Image 1 (cartoon, rainbow over the protein chains, first blue to last red):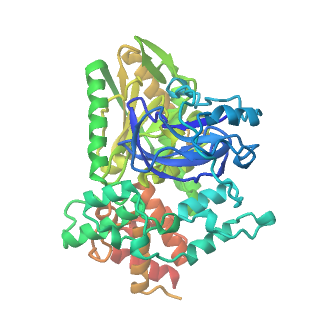
Image 2: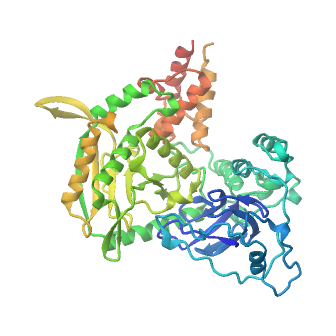
Image 3: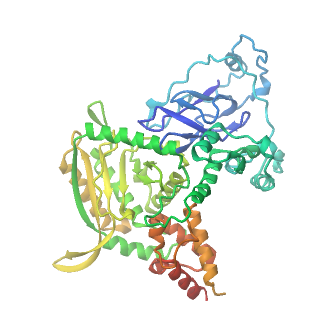
Length: 478
Length: 83
């Protein structure tokens, strides 16, 4: 039973995506959840994972190609019986390969043919029957490596086929990969491979690909390499630009094409939001004195890497409030409210000089504060590096936009359809504040809620903000 | 071993470049606000502190953050604390 690896839908507004690079080779054994490819969605580059166990038989799509959602991109064969057992018709016979493979490997790898994330089952297209002509089965490769090691190799651009395994049974270890990466030298320019996407990008950015150091397999030049090379090139052109405005640094995904595509995607989505959603807005100012005092105390006892920031506590409180007021956690679909099955908290992240993306922290209401903090850091770091995972782009049930670091005190946001609410967080500022008839100076933050008036009324939004306020007064319980 | 201003400058530069890969760290004036100049949000700043801690071996508390405002103040801070 071969299953196709198809272009996934990574958001309600996505209808096609560009394959940026493959993270696997033909012949690789993959497991459900292993990163397969990097896909560019106009908004962000996302690592897409395999939905099945199996062996990569054929890569059907070249990097750089833009294909519609649902298009098969790679053919997976059964994991148990790798290609060599089935010498499928090598000659261009009229016998289709798939039935042959099925006959010889009846063991169904997984009954889960379409185990799409539960959040968005509808977007996972049913695997179409294989009509494509048979291709010779991929030559089996003998370079066993665990998925983490393969992923590591992919990150370093090390071709596993060229690595001698020193582990048990000739397995390739992480150390082997590191050695291979260190030993790699730059191949002569003439023999270099440049992915089509990288080539196009190079043209757009005015980068000479021959001067680019390739980090892909065999020194192949990848899009990342071009982007890395483009940055110094850009600086050379504009020598001493005083950072009057904080330079809109665009280290990772600065492709003009992406920026334009992202603008289009945001324009379409926000246009739809303002056309269709009758927004209402409620706001409140919350005393963060207890939270900041508590954070200062707890952070003193924490290693630097595990320190907590107020933004994480605000997310945590929002996730709990979303569970307490479920009318705001979900979607408006076909004229009615569909509650989210869990709280998937979208976090609007502005990528330096790049697009706005809103990946989700899944099951946010079940994560304690330190875990929320960890997820937040991880999510933001990867969003900026252009490496979000597919599951993170699946529909959030409620989104938070925190512009406090940008210096504004209040955000009155636009709801991301089909969600029914959006929480805005401003900057934490010190203000005169009266408590029990006494005036003092306290850190406060302005919270807003934009609600879809079709789904709820202002009183629901008010209850939601009051819940967050109450939670933030007892930070030790977060 | 006291951290010299030059060492501190390198540490700050290295840390900033890890966070903002194309930042012009050499061009930053000693008294420019680092957070503003490099557009660091609270998560970036935490990473900055983490990287500085790793490189300098100095444990930096939240109460010390105001001393990391500029290149000059960070140099002074690291020199004092590492001494």
